[in-house]
Image 1 (cartoon, one colour):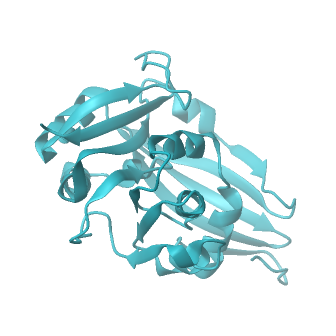
Image 2: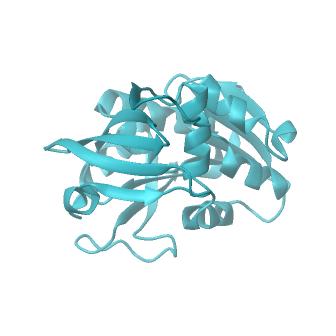
Length: 250
């Protein structure tokens, strides 16, 4: 975690760094979306694939409930944090991008959570992830992922957003650096004592219609779309979330 340093220091890093992975873990505890995704798994043991699993919090929650879980992430530092958690020994951890992951296994449930779909900035990457889902989904299984509704004014909401992370020692501040078309870029800084770690990110905010086109292009079929984590119907001008549930065509 962050340590005190002499003078003021700013370090540009990303989540492949062990220190940033530790901060990610602190900043992203189980939230309301976890309950939603956990509810998609059958009560009896089923097979679950988590693409872009990060530090494995949701994977471990699935494993705790008796499910057979595979967690995929491209960042070794994230998986190192994941492997130290309770129930981690029950999980298959794979260091790989969601686009490139291939296995002989087929899964009852495939998820991509935490708005990770929005880091896929090009249609080629988004379609490749959806094709990974199609290739590894059992017939009768479901694939689920989420993205924020672009009709919400996220720039206004996120402008100079700041919060103190659990533990009270680290302050997280988000600053918008660019916004155009479907894309918002921002700098996130984590300050502790006289040291600041910085990450730079760009997210894509595709429309519902465009995501549906990509789902169809991948060979999947859209089954449902929800607007919040209570599974309310999606409302184009009001819902903050777009939660897609897809399956293999019968």
